[in-house]
Amino acid sequence: MHRLYGRDRSLKRTNGGHGTFTMPTQKQQSLLRYKARDLSIHLCGYHFRRCRESFTLPLRLAGPMALRLLLAVAVGALALDLAAALGVNYGQVADNLPSPQDAAVLLRALKATKVKLYDADARVLSAFAGSGVDFTVGVPDNLVPRLASNPSAAATWVRANILPHLPATSITTVTVGNEVLTGTDTTMLRSLLPAMESLHSALAACNISSHIAVTTAHSLAVLSSSFPPSSGAFRHDLLPYITPLLSFLAKTNSPFLINAYPYFAYKGDPGSVDLDYVLFQSNAGVLDAATGLRYGNMLHAQVNAVRTAICAADYGRAVEIQVSETGWPSQGDGDEAGASPQNAARYNGNLMRLVAQRKGTPGAPGEPLQVYVFALFNENQKPGPASERHYGLFKPDGTPAYDVGVKAPTIGGWKGSGNDNGNGANNGTGGGAGLVVAEGPGETGGGVGPGTGYYTISSATLKAKRWRCTGSSPLMAIIFLVVHGLCWS
Image (cartoon, rainbow, N blue to C red; front, top):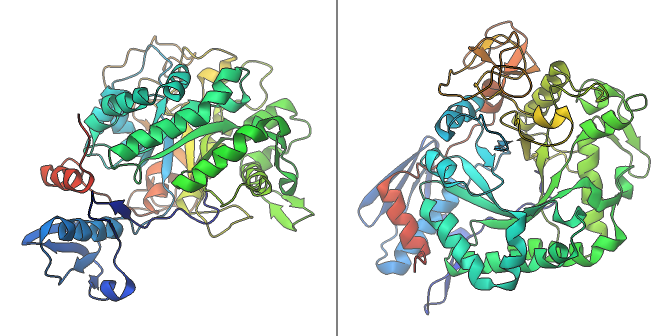
């Protein structure tokens, strides 16, 4: 989500016994000729083209070091667009979900450029080869102690779950466990950081640690105080684990992930919590008297509470913060206040519009908010109250979970049961319905249509214009292997 100071995007890598190379100096970069439409990089007679930017390198260099240097410049150029992108959690705790190929169709309709998995499902990663989507993959909780106690296990996991998919599928982050620090297993707590360190070392051995971050996701329960945001603090009993973990994240330029759900606050006390405040609707806001900052929504307040806690931990450098999960259920049990299609559409729609507009929090308004919406599908096998099975943007048949009457792509081959208990039935939502995400000015060219007064997910996220490498190209695969020297043995 959100950078405290921003991640270091400079490239610095080892080159065997030949020392290191870095991005060119300002003087060297002055040799580059910049134009605004195409990216043209001439490398030893080869010509690579990318959309929207153009560089020509008039450097006569030869040999492996020259090639690596020029490729470093290319990678740096391709990373110019750092705008926050729409992320979606792709959970699979269900027995009726469509194929990954069909899921790719829906994610493409959403214009989602980041996807988060809870494992490293090879079927999904293969289905998205060449898509340009950035993936976060997960190491399951049950593997954490093993990775911590056996470094070779981390290397084995990387060879089995990461390397086979590179570079065709973009994998940018690996999460180790999920909400481990708020669990009760002390072995897991002690194993978390060593497992992360082992995994980072395994990635470094393959020369890809600078491009794949290692982190873990936390619930807001890691905080002892979250309101007002200026009082944010980590639980005292977790500081022995969190402080060195923060140091690791800062050292490796990896983000701090938080799962934040304003819905739970509203559900717990609907009489006191302003629904407009949690749904990003117009409201008076909440003032933090200590800082003078006014918060127009609860998610921003929760994020800044985490920010305050990180700063108070006094571990060293600042780290990036991302919201790895947030969402709103479209259905719930009778005692689950606020769980409705209308509220889910408002929450997720307004949230996505904030992402598309590159909105930051009051504590850092100039920094885009990186968010992963939970979730892509309703998942019919999730335990707990009914709301747990109704967080999806889509039902498993590919129709939206919210009845908005806008055409969306049709997918086939779903295995739903035909009722509306999270299994993907139509409930007045036609098979061609699409997902309207937020009120806004009517528009053409990707929107619902002129004068409708709504943004679709597609049109909203298209505003954050992005361009990406086509990793399916054999030539790009060769470039990747030359740069990284992957360790397949």
